[in-house]
Image 1: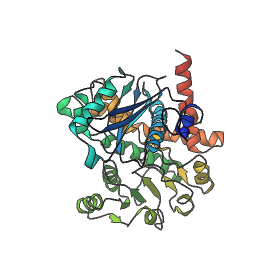
Image 2: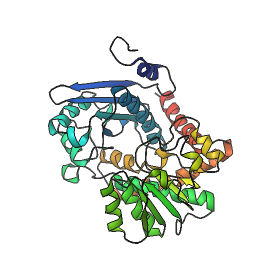
Image 3: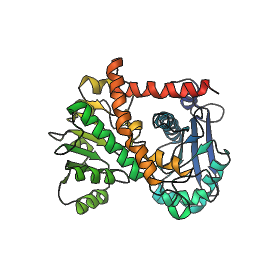
Amino acid sequence: MTDVTGAPADVLHTLFHSDQGGHEQVVLCQDRATGLKAVIALHSTALGPALGGTRFYPYPNEAAAVADALNLARGMSYKNAMAGLDHGGGKAVIIGDPDQDKTEELLLAYGRFVASLGGRYVTACDVGTYVADMDVVARECRWTTGRSPENGGAGDSSVLTAFGVYQGMRASAQHLWGDPSLRDRRVGVAGVGKVGHHLVGHLLAEGAEVVVTDVREDAVRRILDRYPQGVTAVADTEALIRVEGLDVYAPCALGGALDDASVPVLTARVVCGAANNQLAHPGVEKDLADRGILYAPDYVVNAGGVIQVADELHGFDFERCRAKAAKIFDTTLAIFARAKEDGIPPAAAADRIAEQRIAEARAAR
């Protein structure tokens, strides 16, 4: 069933009525000349202009793209709140295969749509978009971060994203085992692309044993060639989550990694990764807790990248950003403590803290 605009009715119900909705604004963008089809979702601007990346992905249909934009934007509100940033949450998705459909003209057209929001939304890189793409978008839109240093930006945000996830892992180890060290821990990393390969470097430097997988064989080969010692590879994520003696599982690809099929067979004691929206549906966080698996909320530990791009708006300083990202260790420990105090899973505790900050900002307007 569709509404008068032709959009699937369930999408509009999600936007206006469901717990996944509550967004301030959703913009559907189309430029026939370049083939651009995009969705920009602003979940909240209570803390400041919405900040979040642009995902370029071959969604199976428009409804899936809208749903992903809504979920990702909501997650950015919580992520930015927990990172202590003066930004609300937003996200954009471009529908298409970035390897086939991405052109300079399409990115320029997209930049004009972002600019039309007058600063309510600040964009950056995400899955399928890179620093060079943001340089193009910035030619039409000054509210663009994640640009190259040559164009006044901070460069690759995956560096600090990986560093923040690493700090979240250390906090998880401290909480569960009483020691933040990951030496001799076996860590499984699913997805060794932009963020995952930096995370592997941190883990190996500390003496962890790393097991990797990725849908792209070249990504796995790059890791194995760079780190001939200390890294092994398995065929796929299904094999990785079943690795015997796995201490930590790090989902670093797309969302939905923790679901009704994966949680019952997961061997790891800790889940801490860079992927957004790792919980496939509400209730998975309780399933993890019931199995004694400690979950470090994704939007807390992967906030290093957004800390970096937010700083870019004020004159980028890498060491300042790294110091802020290092505080993810303390934030993660505080969430575990709140979860224990309230008798709830860590994901629910993080949501409560983020929602409180957003509500206080809204009330102060």
